[in-house]
Length: 240
Image: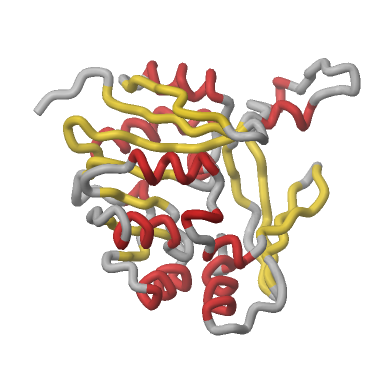
């Protein structure tokens, strides 16, 4: 993304200049919004999937795409865990630090290679950063390098097949256009707009198959009310 959309919106809210939300545009769907206050929610305001993930986190945690730092703050202040919070948004990391996140840095997960963690946390449709389904093998290969022995990946996503359901309940997509969970989005905030970018929603069975093919065990932890779910992935064979 060419503009720091999330960073500008997060800074405005933190500085009491919140007047509008982020608009999400997709080629084949109506515009949606991301309410900025939602990025500052407390544990009690989080969906059950996020609460469960935060309860399951252990050891040294890497919070990927940390945004305004709400997950990180809970893990750091209430769970007393050591958390490294990363995001590609400079503005988001700036506010994370101001909110009290102890270890926050501007970092792309795919370029991070200096440390290993017990828990890798991917929330708010954490599978999205994979981009395209054909990139999932490279993604998992990289994550293996970041996991300590006995480590875990906690990731949430959604099965969006319901968007392609007919009135009679039948499901049809044009497979020649790729996996149905591959979306393209553009973000707009005030007078800023991002480039179009890829974002992946992945159904659980497809995630499990890809995980297994890459040497991970994949467990369905819990399901939400909107075709969303939380998965836990661990290395199938872990060595010291």
